[in-house]
Image 1 (tube, rainbow, N blue to C red):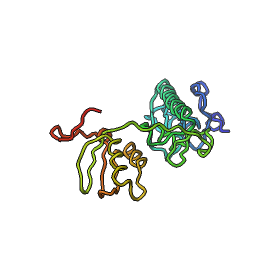
Image 2: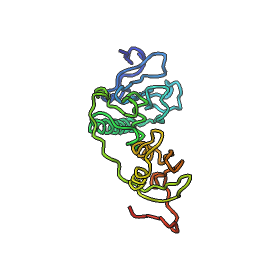
Image 3: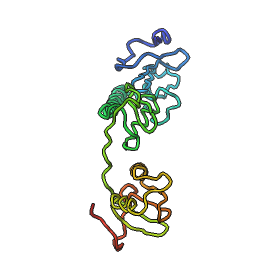
Image 4: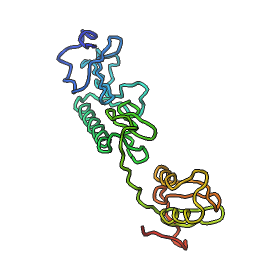
Length: 238
């Protein structure tokens, strides 16, 4: 294990602040100053000399918090001379990661990525703090997805704008559109109700083939559309 006192023997012991819990010494004498990393958070702290004249860049800040992986560019580094700012940022990161892991635990260890609107999960995946199996974000301590039992709630009904080669455009509830499809010939080329629901939830639109030709369905709310008030089928009420 690295030891900043051995790697940087001229670094005054009195100038080293108390290192936050979970950070391990990763110092190396070829670096500019001591540094400490946290596998739990995917972060690194650089702690430079208190005396600016001893720093590699004298006008630089004394403390820097950044992702521990050099290829992780999704979070901007924090550079400051105030140690309290670093500690506050670490605790905020710890709280956000803890909340994400708790969310996965409540879902029996995994959540479909399209069910989430939280970029923090993408950050955690990038840093290796969680894993992904298929379309699932998975807790690092979860069993294999094949062994998990999931309870999938049926998505809430939604207003959609439907248009086809020979019909539309028309505004209706998704359940109504699906009932119409089922009553008039079913779904072609492996298209299904589930396919449509998943795509509308994830990206807001779905294109397929039905007995009436090609069709396009838009989730009005997801893509932030509002129907024209003069449209004969306008339905603003859910």
